[in-house]
Length: 352
Ligand SMILES: Cc1cc2nc3c(=O)[nH]c(=O)nc-3n(C[C@H](O)[C@H](O)[C@H](O)COP(=O)(O)O)c2cc1C
Image (cartoon, rainbow, N blue to C red; front, side):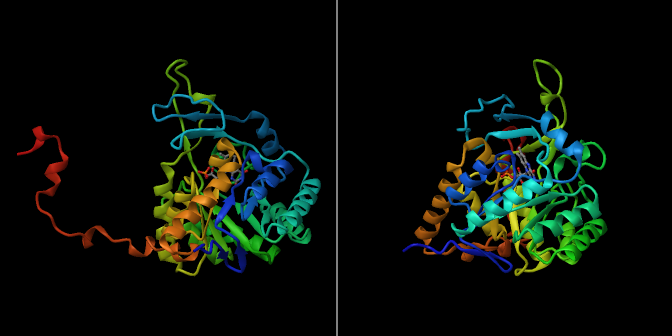
């Protein structure tokens, strides 16, 4: 039996839950076409905004893959699953007009594969952002992803990339963009918050149709040879380890916003079984970025295949997975009492 991989994000039907997330490899037509050809249900284009400094920042990017000893790995498009990516990034340099024409044409191509190309805006100035959103809708694109949680916000020049951590402002920002456009609005939030679920609620209250969660963490890695920061700066860090952190916020957000409100997982998925994990935690779809950028577009096809094998083996459909683990999340107080059980987990010398 073949399983049904299709899912829905509100009124938008996706042929499967695998989305190519926004990154340097979704900044070129070739990259976006390759993601579509590999079977992605949607491709989120590299983000843009009006800030010249954000464009300049792209010329100052740097990237390193690290093993669990924090040693650099070769950049050979075949990284181990647990490779961690430390990087700086900037935004699209092309002017907004031609960029939009390109995305609209690619989205038309995508439709022939029952897929979508989704433009992404990173907030700088709110009124300008609303204007860009209107132009995106007028160009016929069907979905907008608005990232107000890019990790680089604290490091970028002021006014270049807004990293919003305050719930009231999240609601106001989303409400302004909501007034500007009627198309489905996906809002991508930071993971660098004490309460990601509260930010998600604020975005929903502002009119978001879906929440994409959650942005990577900022990090500093001292290099043992140079005794200076690796890459010279603080930088965003991601890896397979981030998946359980994201899953927890997905589950808590599902609890807060209800089962019907669509969540999209990002940050930590490396393969099809990770997509399963994200769905179980409450995501309706998953954006993979680092795995595709560092492993090549074949990762998308492999991911869809691994997901479909998992489902077929269990006689399940993708929709059956959504929130299954989240809805069984227990509290510490619900646990069976096992006096003295802890002592098996300490070194023998520590036992009485
Ligand atoms: C090199 C690089 C560039 C990125 N650029 C963007 C971007 O322009 N816009 C955006 O919303 N997210 C961007 N991201 C974030 C990713 O889309 C994704 O949310 C994040 O890396 C976590 O998912 P992952 O573990 O699958 O990589 C970027 C990530 C990387 C690694």
